Length: 499
Image 1 (spheres, one colour):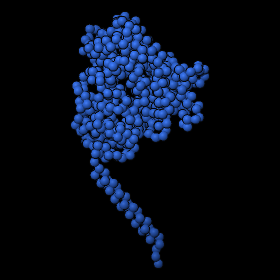
Image 2 (cartoon, rainbow, N blue to C red):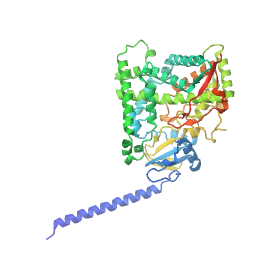
Image 3 (cartoon, one colour):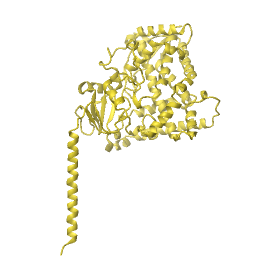
């Protein structure tokens, strides 16, 4: 008589062994297949941390130096995350134009997820229908040319305050960096909220927010070590900062709910506009309150640090290069024709001003490493096989200083942009201060108007010299380490009236 129980056990064991053999064979074939893939050149890596140890205190410079050795398309492993580093205009064009759709996603990162309400903003949200609709709404309603023009009075009033502060300094030392920071923050506050919020310390809250955004989070790159972020208090600090700003934004929204509007769109700020979109049932998109707050935070994070740092560096370069300052002053004087101020209508006539701003942005890209992208699916890039899920970092700072694209790339020479078609709009990949493609910065026009207007008026009204007898050529241009490229030390000047 057959022992059916033993027979059943035999077949179960045989099935398990067969399954195990097939599994091992499948993994071996997969491994063998991966080893045959052509991957970009890569420096040696360490266990667990990968290539993190090679980033150093200045990742933009370390990555540029590595790319000089391994090529403009290089594969690093940041923890367990395969990451492409792009350091030339040619490769940037392939990523941001030829394969833009493939590389249009964002990686899921712990800190932005906490700070931006689950990354429901434009900058950090994953690519898809939600992101497309949200970006379309924001660009159309907040950042269109018409909307940017509607805030002209705000820009002109805040510019006037800066000029007045410089004129009233009467030869005393002025912290130009702080003055430009206040200008940027005040314009953004008035445009977004309708007023400034000195009394509630909004600027200090925002600084903590931005600093947290640039903090390294272990769990985003080595998931099985994510407990370190909890143990170190990083996640707790991120939640605390998020809660603090959320409380502030809730108060702002409550004020707007009870505000009586005047007639005409010109009286509306960003919160008013977004509240109107919330009420509009015809757009087919639900803009909830958390998304509204995430978008407002986007405006400040993308605008405050980047616009301020761009202004700070442009002023620093002008003071360090008296020849350029004098040439710009001559242009401003000719355009002003005896008037005391430069208006926004004058800016299109000022070709050298535009060249100065471009050159400052080339040398000091506000976001030196553009926000990471992620491959949505596998693709062949420059002859290499790129697996889905691979992150991409574009070193805009290195590309802006690449001797292949620029003569004397370390020198400040605005003349290189005269009679030169290179623009900000992401069509020239050797110049990427605002990125390019689907993930390019939608607020570039808003930013450029702010920068050009204040620079033109400062140069028109004021002469500068450095305190304590320091010569222009000796101005300290040391860079601080952070998400954005900012001066390590504030720009201190002495101002005197020019006209």
